[in-house]
Length: 166
Image (cartoon, rainbow, N blue to C red; front, side, top):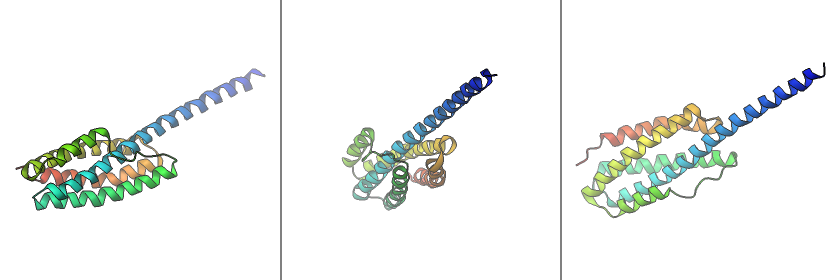
């Protein structure tokens, strides 16, 4: 009869470890999401500021203003969530995004507009994929944030795809 409590304790311990492992995996997904989303958002704002200086097209400048407003708001929300979860976010865009910004900064006029539009199409395809994954596989506040932000990113994607590339 003493075996049953020992077996039950062992089963309970295995179950608890399984739950902890699943939680750690989800937390890893959330952390990866938050890091990538923060870096991408900062890159969006920085590239949009370049667009306001280097573009000659009113439609591109209007899009850039929207990127600054929407991505700044989302970035602030993400910082608040990360802080409440005890997660430190990166302080700037990724190295890859930094390189893209350097290249964009060297362009102007039609060359800039073409490169910026193409960059934004790729960036928003990646953002929609990232936020979709988090809204499906993430947890808690990060999942809620991704689900709430996804329609705005999808709208950005439609907007940038509608701009003609001259």
